[in-house]
Image (cartoon, rainbow, N blue to C red; front, side):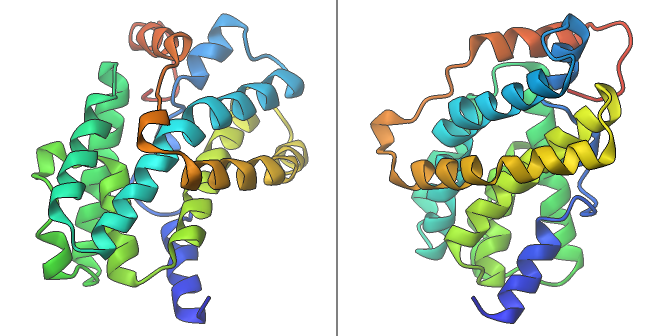
Length: 226
């Protein structure tokens, strides 16, 4: 991997990227409120299970397909997978989250001057722009290798989940880093599975996560937007 592409990837996978990822827990805060997550063991189990049952089976495979579609300049495939991903957001919070961050990332790439007109022409309207679509577009514009970009996407997700646990379980900073390090083999496995799944094997079936997200919408006290 060339140094330029690596530096681009480190920047766009950083939690410091101003797209608001830190303000979302993706249902984890509701799991904390319910007591399903309450200590380091249950926190790790939650993250690992969501990684394998949701991220590796749906989010990451869709992102993989979007990256390939952008690299081929296949506008039809971009539109197809964009529509499918947005349709998979089965709660108001999950839909608002991906649209807000997708819009923010697209605006950021435009303001930084890295947007490619030929690539951005394939983007859906701003009101329908999901985060994986904006991320795949940035990957194409910056010529970042797809395998590394997929791993970075999964790591950024896991890092954000761990940070939620550090703040809210609570975990110590070292315990959080230890947990993140322990997830490395599972992140590699999830990325491999995401690349190998056939279209007909993709699934976002996670009813308990959806129910927790719905509970979070009316949760009395909360720190996160999802």
